[in-house]
Image 1 (tube, rainbow, N blue to C red):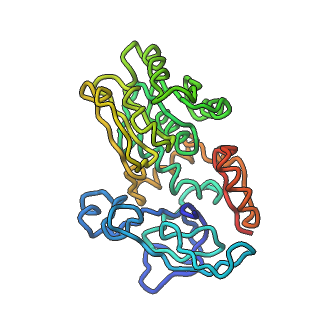
Image 2: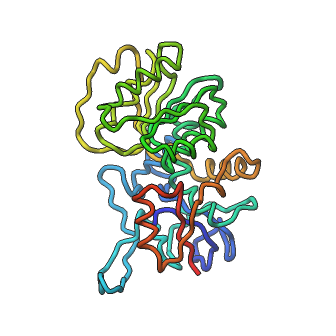
Image 3: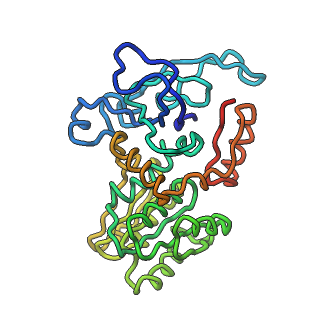
Length: 315
């Protein structure tokens, strides 16, 4: 909770040199150290020193005292080293990227995880080629950004799959050329995969992205792609699942990238420019904002799938 955010720099420490008081910034939770093996390899999103999620690391960003009628005097840790469900937060300089275009903070706030994860999975991880076919399983906040990432990459056919017809209508706004409403009883989406094949010359899509966070669908993108196609597990499923190895036949590639392989000081400015050009839809994605006092409603709406993205705005 509180791992995305944007705002104005209110104070800087004596060793901070890249940002100054008053700078508008968006925040990035995969905070690189720039010196470890993975950072030197260009894998800043899996920094061996600062990563909040890679194996063996537990980043503590400090603690705060939280008081309410339900949780009184409970110490809570800052989520992912950011802790943005607060009016002020203390972060590393490497967590900040300056906002260099005309962008409201409400839109800038959502770049830091869902937008970067979706777009980066297309552009950095799968490297989707123009004229190809793409399937997106799940059209929540991340899935919508996979869809518009595929549109920006020049994919010719973008097939959105979801059980929620309202979400599928939303997917069209972001670039889906075709939609397919899945049946909840379709185990592993095998029936949906058969339909996808009929839509892609009988062979399957070039790329398929899983964005549902449902463990049982972890292998579903393999059923959607052609021989030598690429399946991308975007949502970070970590549970043990059974996989029919026939789904890998033949020459299929399955990857599980973290955070769209984000390099914040490179990728965030690119996303800002795409927004400024009108290619990356962010304002439209924020379907509702909430004051901090309505946090309970924000979570309820998130869990019910009512918003593309909901944003908590500090007064």
